[in-house]
Length: 439
Image (cartoon, rainbow, N blue to C red; front, side):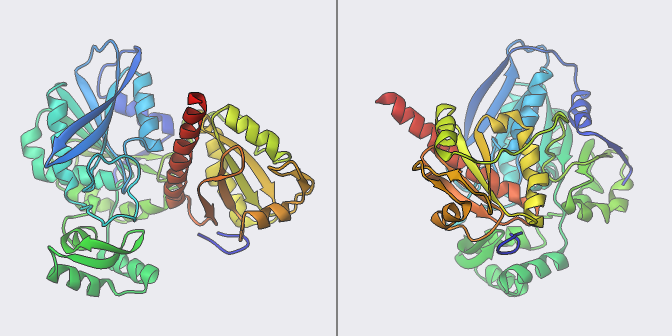
């Protein structure tokens, strides 16, 4: 993720508030008390989880069903924030977690287990959730982010003819696009393996496990047909070509700062010819549409001076002590601050879980977790830090709650690793607090 010591269409434009406002123009709204309820349904022997948020006094018979991005879950920041904003406007929403072949899945899918995920299988699970929603609401707006946007379109392709008029329209937020040549080049560049050879092996062993590199997971066991679902021509992962002929109204949101939007831009002509598709560009938005609802008040990252005191504060507030290790004149550090840490400081829901402090590589007179005054270099050696920027996820005593994140390259995927680490660390903080309360 960067260097070693310093690492690393027919469209219109608008701001982030427009995203939610335009979604809400699809229905009449009522402001009321918000209730959050976990929901679980069963499909093909798997328990599927969702998170339902709705006003206590419901006057509308409509719901937004939201599908997360690559190997994510219903509690991802972009999904959680969208549900909160919809709830503020009195609108019900149901965020779903795709099983990816795992029973009762919660949180991000990692690389530890044999991979059972299949990109195209999501359409069948989305259909089950649409059926559930139809049993409770008359009208559904189906929303998908990133890979989830493409999977919403695959649902439309497979089941759209039977879900009218319940599904009123589709909303795609930064939907994925795909190009075979670019995918092959990226795969070989990342893993040093010719993708065509992997595809041939997977085709020959479609119903058998193959050992291969898959997305961000090197050397995992995956069924051949599941590997094909992520890298072959079918299912169609190029959302722009699916939008070319879609018959249902679709609203597409893209961010002007999203590097992944290039794949959509170069296929603008495909979408422009379909009058049912409206594209809205959001100024300043990245792939995860962060920092669009935040205030513009100044925020600063506080320097760590006394880790005993900082740890005690984090423990008292049931927070993660997030220690950000930086270097002077480090461009990767500056990018991390601008694109991740400063937006995070403006996010009150995220900061409720995090106590952020900065440890500069050249800092002196820092009190460590044992109460000793030391230079930062000694602390850096103690934590075996190899470069900057590094994020340490610590408890109040300085013990690591989740693996550190070293380096910085791109905010588009850095947030996936960051959210995963925060979720893991915060779960341990909550567990520690619960055990302490039980004593």
